[in-house]
Length: 102
Image (spheres, one colour):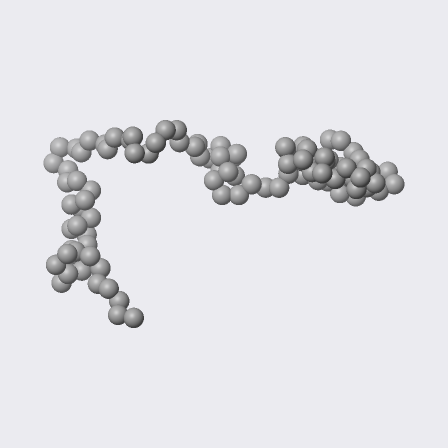
């Protein structure tokens, strides 16, 4: 880890911030004593999950993905959803949730 003084940081802040953004850590000293460490900001959301290896970004177009074949005797997902809606809202002829009156 590189060590730089406060004066050097002040005079070249943009350069050092760029290096930190690229992943480098830099120790800041005041009169030779370490006082701070500049480290890259933690990434959040999908970027953090990718960095941690917990997810992989997909390739190609999601519309190119072919549906999985149904097992013999298995109902299509759309029919199972319709049945679940009908069980939840039996009085609705279209199997959709009733609208709230606001």
